[in-house]
Image (cartoon, rainbow, N blue to C red):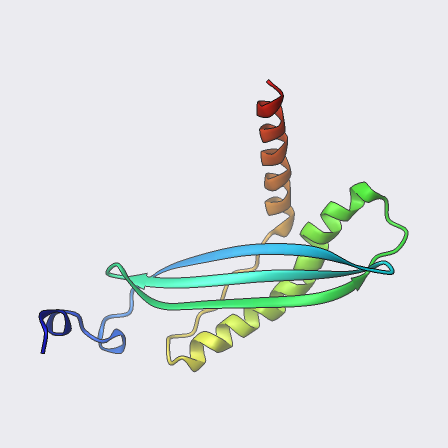
Length: 133
């Protein structure tokens, strides 16, 4: 047996105290005829002792009919409203995926997409201001 195998216990033989990192992303694509595909991507990485214990990534998509909205209203629609509809499904799949992998249950907290969207808008405005100077 090598030294690495002797010093590192298998993931299920260790005390389970991982650091869990959750990454969220959403994208929108125009499909034509007022239909848009919105995809919410959730990536969960659990690390312990500088070793990745698991990485789970889920993409939950939905097709939305958006008609009669002003162009400036589309940002909040695709950045807040649609992700709020899709995220509970992605959250459920992540929980199921982790549990099926024989890891302890992982339930992601609800996400405030409105706050995330506002932060992104503020960052884009700050970047635009920096490039203007």
